[in-house]
Length: 468
Ligand code: ARG
Image (cartoon, rainbow, N blue to C red; front, side, top):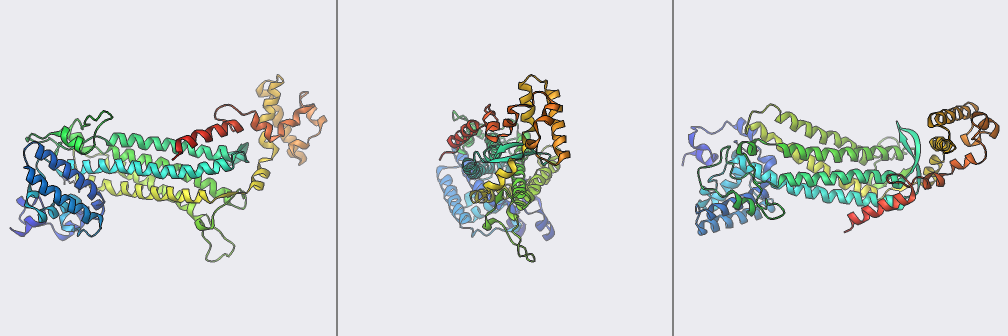
């Protein structure tokens, strides 16, 4: 056999092998080798289908299947000799199978690397979605423990990073649980969209051979709830489509954005200026110069890696934009951003989980900050509304009251009765009751509000969803 044939499965029409620079430039095995388990699974499914339609004998299928199983073990043991000159995971594995059995020459019958890689990635996405869902659950459970422990601990809620209204740690942390719950759903959707089999599309136009697309789809688990095979309906779309990559990268990005905002809250809360939380030593670091420092690096990295994860989404969108149908080699660049988003998000979720599990709130600091009467200025306007004052007027009256307190350098609660009544006749008697935090929360018992019953019912909701 001339040397060129041993170096590429497509060597037939070439008189020389690729330049060594081209080999290094064009290879993808350094990163797509992680698809090996999916590639082998896909090959076994494809081989079973070839046997089913009579293009392989039972004995040949057996040979291939034994070879594939051996390769699965070698790949798992991580001692598989990946070779750059075989370009990608598909050709490395096919070549390795050839070493085991000559029947491997028949494996690629009716198949192209285009539908092969599309299949591998769909199998990868199914696993990746469920793995990230497990990681999401871990982080959500850790957050839920915090919400349970500090369900009624008041803290200021912020808009524009200015103290706005009192909430509780339970309410604030539950906000993140709700967001991560939506992320969980998004991965279910991506997994559902992944569940369609491209095999049989060939390069773009299928095959003249009597392939049984339904058979291979079922063999690989691309089935709906009733067990019916799910097939891509257009061969050109099947090999050109990278929607799933974008969807997956987007789903990773929304999780990352949520974690990044959580990280930002914790970084602020951990600062001396807020002092609401004490982060665990195990997830903070010191300064090489300043002995007193304890830096929230874990959360800063979660925030920092979000840029990378969002960048991966942008990378994919720009790679795909402007490609004519169908497959173009540019598409080989679709995998590094996907693997990176998966890896980085997995570790971010693990860090957030471990960090949250060991985070303590400083009850005193939280209560002191939440006791600022200005936080209940809106409640005072509501009080006036309940006395029949139109809201706009009530807003104005309380605004004047706030201005008065500010000019006198006193708290809203320290304004004397005469000054108050001069602004509104209704500000007499029990108006200062409004500044009782317990009252403020008890009056907020509609869905979505931070009333104690609302918080405990939402905690119970998530407890039942996240129960083992
Ligand atoms: N390594 C290639 C990729 O990831 C596999 C598909 C190659 N197809 C081709 N027509 N060259 O995109």
